[in-house]
Image (cartoon, rainbow, N blue to C red; front, side):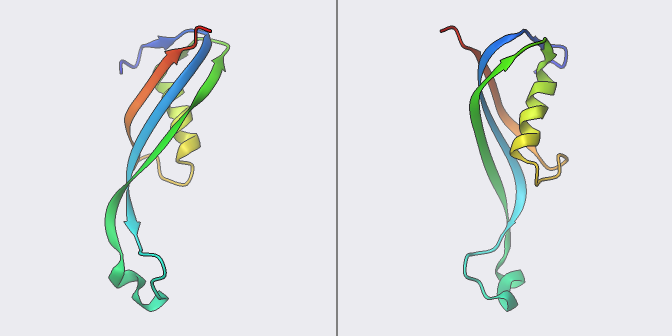
Amino acid sequence: MPASEIVEPGRYDYDLTVKFPSTYIPEHTPPAFRIAESYETTRTRYANGQFDLAEPVARDLLCQHFVNQVCEDVSSDLVTVTRFELTPVTA
């Protein structure tokens, strides 16, 4: 997505998908075995919804706003946006 793309005011639906590296520890693993049983994986989070935009804003800043909400517990350096779609609501 071009950094200079501006999203105009209006009502929008959004769909966001992000991925990030994570360590998985199987449920009910006794504490003494957690390190040995853990393994690296990639986690995916999804978010969607609708919002009203009052002023023009850069698309990348809007995307970052939603990423920050969905991944507040994950370092932004680790998060990769795999999908960010905006659809104007016409009705």
